[in-house]
Image 1: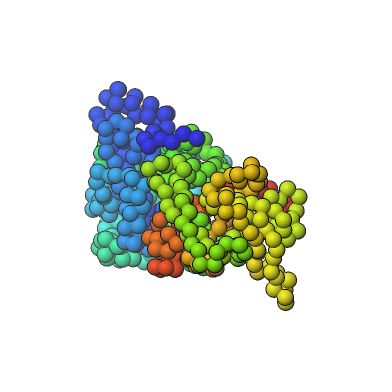
Image 2: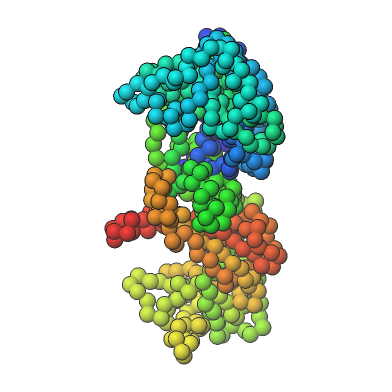
Length: 563
């Protein structure tokens, strides 16, 4: 799997932009990111951001970050700041920060211009009546009884709408196009609706707010955006986008569509993610089980892995689904190169080396990162009593089990050969509480002098020096491949998406980590320090396992008829 630090946008987009420059249609390149500040951004948005940013970058152009703040009932400054922070985290730089609300006055003036040209009118129908008369894919719509209003009356009503004289839902401003148009979007679309809501930037100045189809194309024109790059679902809106600009006689931005990023087992609907947050199914927009950028960051995913994944998926004009396991593969590749190695025992059981000196402590040398020689070495304390994983011992081993069992010998990572001599059990439950063994002093960090071999190496932590930690093991939040489909969110939640282990034992270097520090816990996976941790009491989130276990789990569930 190759890694690129300079991902490029889809070739068909670059070719289209190159042709526009060659033909003289545009003299420069300017793109924009148009997020709506009504929630936190997720991985699906990254593809659009990456395309907009790199298209402008490829031709020495510039990128604007323009917030589509046209729905004050759902938008907050909190989301504006979060979007800016997430965009910077991805390494995306913008030349100018703007807002749709910056252009409310000018947008209203342009609406008045269309009314004066007889191309827009105030409709007194209710929202249900407007919807009922729009028609279907096979049947034309019917004209509003208010479609023929005189221009002066429309101008008067529109001004009174603006002043707040009418209740919400009582009137709208509609473009006058064609109620029999084969594209339903073109059947007299709504341009303004009445909303008596405080806006996070303009306060109570406005009582009418523009619809997205009216605002974004005109904002593109006002800002001199050359290329409006958007996902495939907006292709049906392109004729309206172009119609408005043609009738206004203003700068004509070119809209180009590309396929969405659809990721299996990930929810891309902000509305549905909001429901997960509000109902407590997840613990916030930054829950590590979500594919919001906040969630991915808290889980320990690096922005480079996200961008490399998006680059590798590539550009097409047709929507398709990408398996979550591919995304996880890029996360592993990235973390393998960057992460320091540490030893951590997640489900500990004591291992007592009976013939090791009681008060002796050695320092074993360990590699910090075999992929990065500059990371150097570290020292790990070794003593008579250790912790090992419960799974690394079996009193009665299954076939092909090569770890510890009575009479078997294994290597302790960076240390000695040890041979299991017995086990101590809880008298009440019969559960093993201690494993006993002997060690060979001649095998420290190498093979046995007599040439004998062992078939397994296990990791460990010195009990005397261990740091106790909480570790959160995450799996996919959704059992369904396409959880956005349908409304029954409760039916597709994976009940085993989070397991919290409170008694994990870690090597002492992990005592005082900072939130966001990333490590490979040897033999366990990649982990990231969580902000919930405290000095001496760390909390770690599992970013991803060392290999793709979910595919096996999912396959087994389907086989058993559980999914």
